Image 1 (cartoon, rainbow, N blue to C red):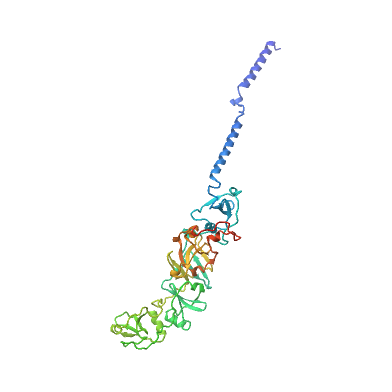
Image 2: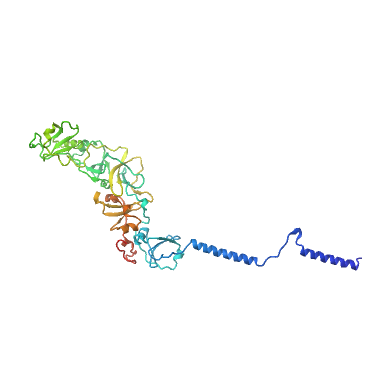
Length: 449
């Protein structure tokens, strides 16, 4: 039996063992430290600061409306696609880009991108703009003011293209066409009407009698400048004596020593006119003579030279040379901004054509359209990427600047080319500032700004 002393020692040992367990840690040397009560508080504060900093940073990269937004600016709403112009803190919805640009002075034009939430609470005015005006305006780099082409399709329609690969100029060649029942010879930039009564004989005399006329629309024919009609050549008072010589009116003479194909025609006023090979063929067709009289320089020395050659002043010198049968006839607008002209061109018949107007993506034109040559200054016209033309009546330098161009960007084109395009509404500053009900909520624009 344990003694009292044994029991006391056993209790002492148990107490020491328990105390050692409390102060020496877990088995294996791993300590279980008590949780710090402030750690969660510090983490919460750090998280809050991070959220605030992120919000500040987002605000910096996504600004609201800048100073000056409320007057004369174009505002684009990124999340809805809406657009407005501003005047005295009022937002005016605008129908299209062209209208917006025509309303705002070029010196103040600025685009502001923002979100719809930044416009909450801003007063709205009535909708402004020109219905049908373009929403995409070509840039100066995208202007194609020449290099236009209009090719005749197999069913006598037109494939009109602005930009891209233009048809090749057919310099010195010709094609016989039929427009509304009348025949014409197209060569270079001219159209020559063929006299109806002697049409076949005229074409044979001109060297292109074997060609079948290509049916073309009148709009295509009108692209070419009218030339003198092709008809038998005759002189009045033929056979009358010419005073002081042995020659008679209507004689065709060749001076000794001159090139074989150089001939002259004695005209009714007693002058000598150059008779080109083509004019000689058409003169023979007139039936007044088919003989060439050989003369000396002395025999014609007393006769003055005519002011112009015999026949049409713009007739070619030689007979016509036809385009290849594998090519289709086209018209091409060539030149630069200072001057353009229309010439005969060709395109391989194997190339695909369709009866439509096509403009290269992103391209367009700004041209002065009107008459031909010096008359080609009447009206500034904008052509957009849809092939639609928009007249700018009364356009000033400020009008042009509002659309993003300078006077040097404007080319020239005869109005017959513009007639091939679809027609849109006229573009003016005044019309752009009208609301859809015809009222004017904005001040009337002054000339030039």
